[in-house]
Image (cartoon, rainbow, N blue to C red; front, side, top):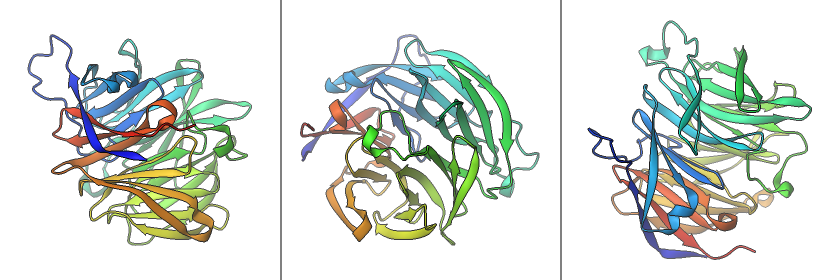
Length: 342
C-alpha cells in the first residue's frame, strides 16, 4: 500500500535569510499541518510554508513566516473558501495568508498573570469550526486552559469572548469533525470540536451552540494530540498510547499501544478510515480503524526513519495517498509514497 522507500524533499530557503542556518521542524507536538495546496511546519520562532505539489520534486522552495515569539503550533485552516495559516505563539495568535506570506491578523491573548507551574504563557490548540447558520469561529487554546473565540468574517477575525472553567491544565490540541478536506461521508450530523489538555481531560463541544456536550477523562495521562470523526475521538498521549473514546457514551472504547515514546502527531485520512501516528521513537504507523466498533484495529504500516525524532505526519498528495513527515533537526520533508486511491 505504501512504498518502503522514503523520499527526502529538501526545503530551499528564500534568498536574503542571513543568520538562519537551518529550517528544520521544532520538536513539538503537531509540528506539521497540511491542506490540499500547502504544507506548513513550525520552526522555532517562524513557520515554514511550501506548496504541496512541490513535494513531488527533490527540493521545494519555501517561505519562512517570521512570527516573533516561539511558535507552539501552526495549522492550516479553511476560512470560508480560503486557506489560512493560524499560528499560536508565546505572544498570542496570528493569521497569515499562505500564498503571499502576508500577516492578516495578530492578536495578543490576555494571558493569566501567573502561568501554571511557572511555565511560559502560550497559545496552542487551533481550529476553525463550522457553525451551521452562524458564522465560522476560530477557537484557540492557551497554557492556562482558557479557550478564546474569534468570529470569522471572510478573511477578517473578530475576537468575541473567552470560554473559561472547562480545563484546568494547558490545552494540548483542538480538532473538529468537519476539518477542511474531509469527505462528506465522514462528517457528523452536527459539527463538533474536541479540546484535549495536558491533564488527561477532553471536552467535546457542539460547534453551532459553542456549548460542551461531553467530557472524556483519562486519569494519570497527558494528551498531546487529538483527532475526531463521527462519534469517536482519537487522542495521543505522552506515554505513547492512542486512546479512543466514544462521544455518546463518554467512555474509553479502546487503547492502542502505539509507540515506545510520546505520540507527537495524529492525522485522520480525509476519506478512508486510516489514522497515521508519529512519535519521537522514529516510527510512523498507519492504523486501519474501520473495525473500531468491534475493537479490530489493524496496523497497516509501521516504518522507522532511523535517527529521526518525528514530530509531524499527515496524509498528502492526490486523494491523500502519500504521507508527509517532519523531524527535528532535519531540513527536509520526508514523503512516503502510497498507491493511488480511487
